[in-house]
Length: 246
Picture 1: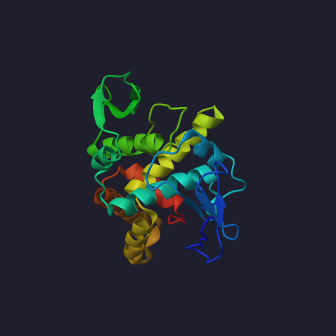
Picture 2: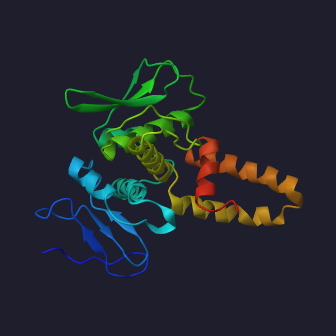
Picture 3: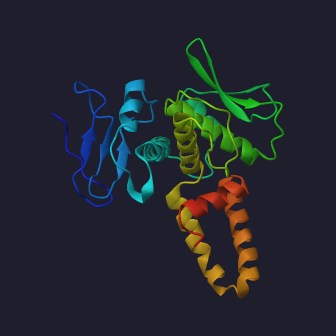
């Protein structure tokens, strides 16, 4: 008998989602508000589990698809499991989850990816790629870790943190977006980003004129990027996605 679970957001009863009728739930969905909680404990999704997540009906709260919401919830589970706070040591997290990071030589256009050898997965960074900062390398590791943990099969080379996925193949596009969503939540948890930004909002309100506000906003974005150790472009996009730059 499956235990009952209640939504952390609205308090309504959540519905279990199954990959197989003879196994435990792979996720829980709140039909009232759309909250989606993945039941993985930080483990990679099996093929049938990933397929079940993709087939869940409707959209989650905020317009997210179930696959994107699953990516975010998985990142949150990892943060909670290991008691992590920003800035997250993403390479250590990857190692703890069984995905060590290695440097290899790849085409110069690629920043990183996943290597699979004899049933073992390794996150790789490209020696030939001109990384601009340690923050950029951290983003690549986080995104590739997301692909590995979520069990993605249509793998593609990692793209910039502030560039939306534009691949033509539907599955690859979904997986690239999910990888970015995972990386964003792992390195820039929504709750912490909102708290830090709101702490700085009074300064923005006191800004006089559009130019002063734009300059101050750039200063805030740069400061947050430094605190979370992510590229400034990734932090700006994160603030936009969270609806904080209206």
